[in-house]
Image (tube, rainbow, N blue to C red; front, side, top):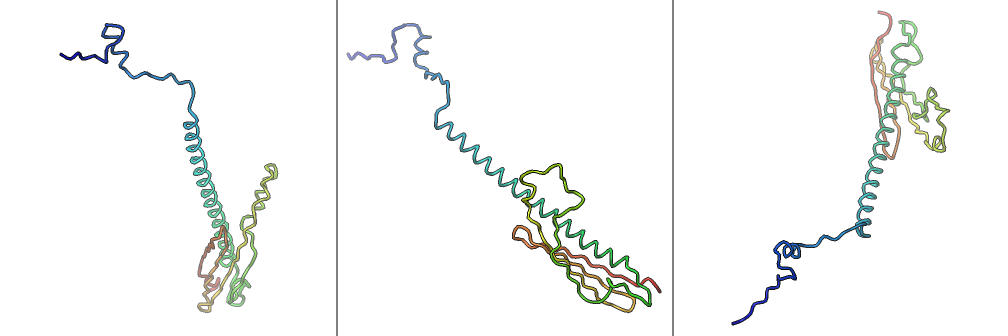
Length: 174
């Protein structure tokens, strides 16, 4: 007869101790390994780079939106001039004269009312001026009616933006 040696036998004959010896041993760890630290740093760098790219893009969108609002204000200013200019049956204001007028090199991101002199820093003067062109076209429709088309065009971040407004103006006298 063959003798089978039980490999599960241990020095103690108590079953609790025998089960403890079979359980996987937990390693006591007091620090992270180098690989774990490098993986964590890689994840953090990836997150930071993505967040920076997103914030930069959001800043570009915000700046383009501010510039479009300023361009719209410039166009609205000219429309207001057309609508408020005096026009009687004998005299037409110069702003209502037929033809095209072009104003070039209008700085869109300069705001005289918001200089923020107390907030000056090394980066305050890094904003490059964004210049635009405002074109006003006045067309006579009839002896008592003109059409005004105002277009403001500017380029920011390699994109060309255009804002256009149009209105009709009747003479003040009947």
